[in-house]
Image 1 (cartoon, helix red, strand yellow):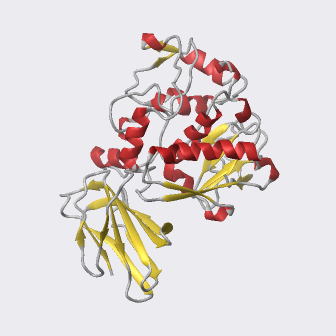
Image 2 (image 1 turned 120 degrees about the vertical axis):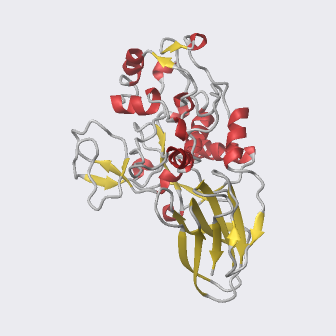
Image 3 (image 1 turned 90 degrees about the vertical axis):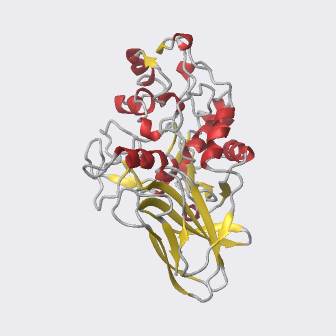
Length: 381
């Protein structure tokens, strides 16, 4: 398949995170890097949407998607996938809508509420997120909108035509894990022929708007959003680009052609975020535990309450964290609650009714320590 005759992944545009005036650059960078990442040990249930019928896919398409989940699982990561049939039990909800291309929300953005604009004159057909009481389309300001149940779309007309269809699904699932497009790395050093890029992607068969081209190709990620300084042209998160789109580096003027599959650097970075083996430590009720975590690092704790009642779980000290509570049943984790205090003048806090003698796992990832790592603690009571 020629590059001009294929469709490309487009991640929906997400509003930029705004920090309060005077918020320091160091914590802001840490939050930008980590905001889409899951805590280690997370189980991501996924389902294939069957309703409305326009979102349903056949068994062959579902098999291609499952192979993508298997590809990441086989790397060995501290994230598990579980296929479910009930959309309300799924975090990743996959549609196969025709003529809607390939896309996925990135990482924890899949948890947000998403909408579609129904205005036929709106130039954008992309989903958008909003937490407003009365959401409106961010492109045309129309109030004629509907909820979009999908967090991912795999175009049923195009996917069977792909020379490497498993790479498509692996790429989209990579987005669900929190990985951005590799060619947008600020360290790639790519100088684009912008006119050629616009002509290609705003034309058939993609028909993207200028904003979508900018958001998915031309805009470079802020250095706060990436870790490391190396660009990987063989990454599963890299596009294949044909000749004539890149001016520099000169060796890529003839195009970028990833080798296919999950690269060695992909493996290194996904295991950096989600280590395959993770020590679960015991925590006792009413006894604070010093977290002693550097930015980006995580710890998890196990405990069993003595009685059934509401329990408080809270961090203390000057730190920004995301904290997730799981119940472990027959060796499988089920998320119960979570709190994220990043960029806010408070501490993460969960109040949840817990059952006596049940096993619970508390997983915490550190965004930023405002004083010292030994200052931040967590307590269950």
